[in-house]
Length: 492
Image 1 (tube, helix red, strand yellow):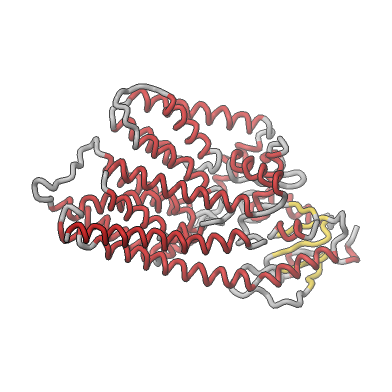
Image 2 (cartoon, rainbow, N blue to C red):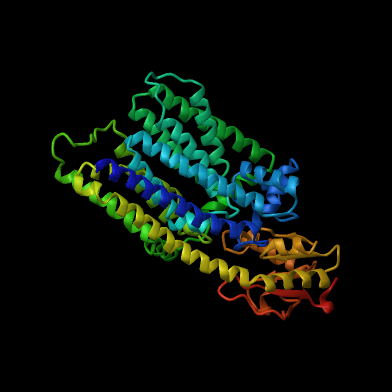
């Protein structure tokens, strides 16, 4: 009977795993083949990526043509740029990179969970927890550096947590970990906590030399790359990533909005409930013989501490203007590992072990809920396609072949065969720099752009340009945009 129950549990969790993977594949597939930006945050990487692939420094063009702001890491731009050179202007390469990275993230979560629990079911529940999160459903197949950076960082953490070498010795594995952590940072510069956790884990296991080597290695290699980028950009790298980054307008009302979005997710409350139940069980004590050690050398304290810090870090950084729920991706991954630890503790009780199939099904229901929300959003995106295609044909018709554009969706100008400036236009308009605002205003006032594709139908924002109505219906519950043409009386 017990063997039958075990087989049934294994079939249930495997079925849930396959079902969640299929749901994510449907959402990811929709985005992979969608021809335009899924928001205002994908095509902005094209110009700095193209410059990087051409051997130029993308951080050197903030105040000169083609007016490039590059908020992400150089290596991310370089990888995307190589994809652009190989396959032309497209989104699928960068989106496929995030799908691959998501798969790597799941494997890394499972590897770390296995290392800290040695419990197959705990590992499976942790993986299912991450697959059902609102953050992963929102960000799967989105052309951004978040998941690639986390894939690199958690690959390093997986190597740290699964290391079986007991001696405090620096070896090839240490060098690989240093390289992965450095690469992760230069994919996205907020990927800092994994570096701290890797060092803390080495210290926790008494590997002082390896911890020092990891810390010094990442610091030295990071400093060399950053210095090279700053020197070859005329100071543009540090100006963008240190000076201007500190001036980004912040609103904790926005941070609360993203927190509330996270709290609307059933997977959040399932994970919170499991971790809370495990903490309560630990506080009241477990009968002798089923106790799970929580000594300072055990990884539990490190994982739970990492979760708390990652969650706070996500909340604080999501207060920045332009933030999104992806700022909680790292916390979602750590939360999945914490779910594994929580189940490992709770499963010492027979009554909890019996609930394993129900917990797996709950994860599936949570993922299905997120899928239904994302599928609805995808349907609105596809319904907007005729409008965006009309914008493309309008630019083809109205803008001379050698004409320049400014577009909140740069890919529309590219689809029309026209060049564009200000690919990441948001950073010129969000108030972080009066100098950047003046650069943008001066460029628009010069009347050098034949067309401007903008967010609002307020013509006073763009003097000298006239709004051109579209025949297609304005996108419903998707990103609206409006085409302005240079008034012939203002043409140079």
